[in-house]
Image 1 (cartoon, rainbow, N blue to C red):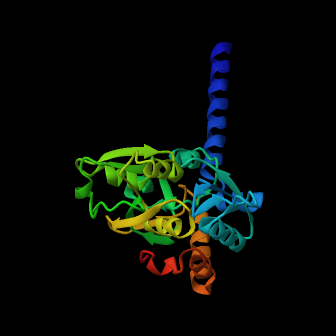
Image 2: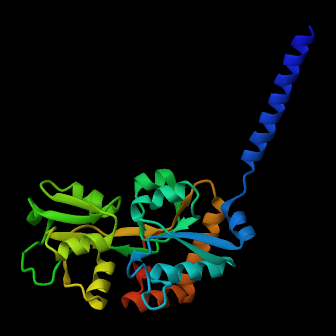
Image 3: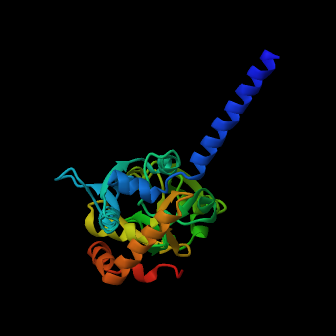
Length: 269
């Protein structure tokens, strides 16, 4: 009899504890509350992806389009920014594990990624473009021209997925742009594939002997991913973006890096 009362007490206590935990989980803080309380928005970036984010060799500081956009949005949210550098191949896993709050690294909005994360409204649209050696006179105008050829891409990127869907193309995946551009110049790949905005910037500002090739796909829209279940944060982030579109501060940053306002070609919402 005493034993049954003891077991019953344990079960009751366990049920109470479970109820408390469940209630606590049901009222978990929205990411907006966490960011505001911390006073910092933690942003994941590659740090090796010019002109979007890279380390300035003179100052040792992160620079680039997405760095300036991060600072702009954090200012509108009333917080500071902390950047965490992570290789592209691990950056989405880092977001899932809570290593950072958001990623500002030209993350394409895809149905597969939307199953795992929420996204802001799009803030950049751009098309896939082939990258060739500067002295290469090969007539690569489409993926069909690359059958039997080696194409360098960033591991885990939309471009890797696009390239692997092309019949007969030998796809080589790399941690990031510096690695596949090195192999391109060294003729270990025949062409590379990336964003046309990045390609234009590299051709204009770097000493790498490369040139932009053909546009080989439809425009993709990039947004800012974050973990699901944070509606207040999503609303605040989208408002900060929309305000920056409306007041011209986003256009100022965009024109500095690309000579155009990339917010003008964002997807309609």
